[in-house]
View 1 (cartoon, helix red, strand yellow):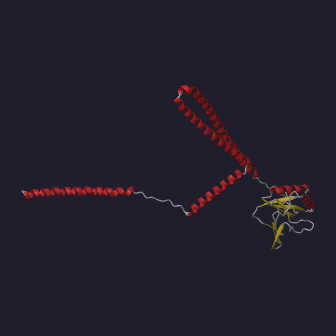
View 2 (cartoon, one colour; view 1 turned 30 degrees about the vertical axis):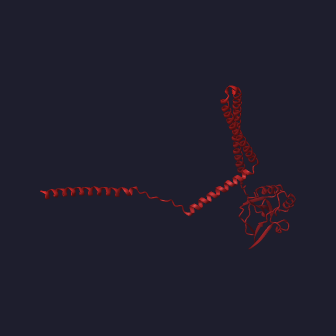
View 3 (cartoon, rainbow, N blue to C red; view 1 turned 60 degrees about the vertical axis):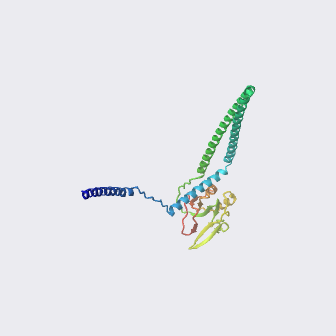
Amino acid sequence: MRSRWDTKKDSLDLLLNTLCDVFGSFILIALILVLPTGIKQVVTPKIDNETLQRRMATAREEMEAIDKRIAELAVDPDIARLQAEKARLDSTIKSLKERSMKLDSDRSKALNASSRDVAKEDSALQEQIKNARIEEESVKNAIDTAVGLESNLKNRIDSINGKIADAKKVRIQQMRLPRERHTDKGAVNVIIRYGRIYPLQLSLKSFAKNTDAIDWTDLGDDAFRATPIEGKGFLSTDTAFFTRWTSEVPSDCFVACYVYEDSIDAFRGFRKLVQDKNVDLGWEPVESSRALRFGSHGSSPNPQ
């Protein structure tokens, strides 16, 4: 009997052990399935060198534009005056606020003092409080006025900035090339650059090269490169020279002007001098980076 009882106990222990092993296996499998889904991969964004350089270049351009804008505003007398007035108003507002704080402090002290001897000082303190309130109201009104003036100053500054922008737009002039007419006349060439006028020949009787104001480079094949010397040419106000010079233009020739983009005003004055002498004139715009070459095989603008 004892031997059979021990056998049943061992069987129960074995069953419990088997059930625990199976349950633990289920838990282990569940953990293995769940854990990988909770792991997040952290991806660090990468910025290549080219993108970084481009951002740095953009930031530098923005800083340069801001510095330029600040420099332009700094030289404007109206803005400088308005800024000085704004600084003065800011100082006034600060002073009024300090006075208001002092009045509040004085009123608080007066109220504390009145508690010590209310019967004796009540009338005087009430008068002081009344005066303090009146002055405080006056200070508040002054602050409101100063704030209004500051707002008006800001509006005026914005208006001036708008006028500056409009003025810059007005300075940008668009040129329209006039209609050309075909001609068999010869061309008397003139370069207009640096705000001055450079005739290729100082005298149209001898047709000698203008070596005083133009550097000549021999390119061979009867061709030359003409480079104006800055500050050496004639001004459009040199009427005595151009009166003589235009009178020497042959009747079978016209004046051909090569106008650089920095000398539009000089060209207008010269064109009036030439047209007043009833001499035909043609012109052609020239970019600042372009060098002019003259020779027997070239072309010139037609008179207009």
